[in-house]
Image (tube, rainbow, N blue to C red; front, top):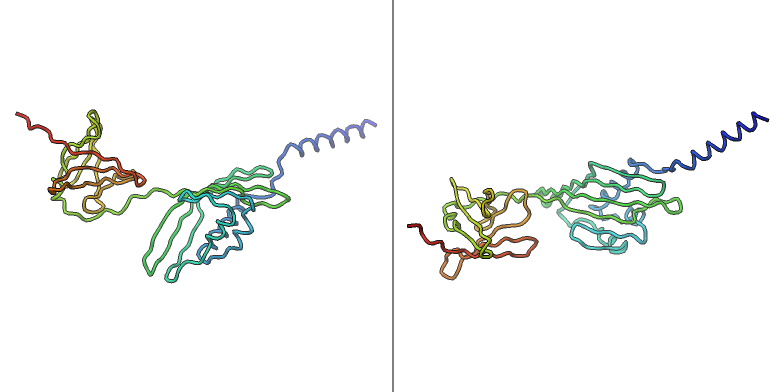
Length: 246
């Protein structure tokens, strides 16, 4: 009698513990394998994995900000044009997996070769997988592209003297451009000096900062404005004349 009661209690305890422990029937390794299968299919234009691993009601946001459903997403998977080849490798994978939902975040290292010239790009993607009717599929995905500084250009530093001066955005907002040993610098107010690295003639960038700094000349050929370009939007600073000190 006591033995039967003890076994019964043990059985209830085991069932309770079992019910409290999430059942995970997929692993990070398997999710990573499927994701690598997806990106391997991109260069060949193989749509089959994309049809298999994305749910019919999925949402996908790419690095250009486009919001695509499954039909639009699958339509994007087409073979690379003639003369192009490439690979994509998923790295630095992290995940959070529950009984019926899994979130996986990872980097994508892309290499593309176009008629012998190699191009590299890095992206970050986060996917949400959902298990429905025993089947794991992606219901949401978002891709971001890492910012990379452009290549430094070869320009004639003798023209930097034309850019030197004070530029005004508003009466209380000034920007100073100076040069030192063949390098150009910008300084906002009493802030630190930051180098403007040349990309092309009249076009500069700051290391680690997305956007460009451009100089524009007036009708007489003089430098009249400094333009801060961010996401194709321009902030215009007008060059001002400072009275010489006596």
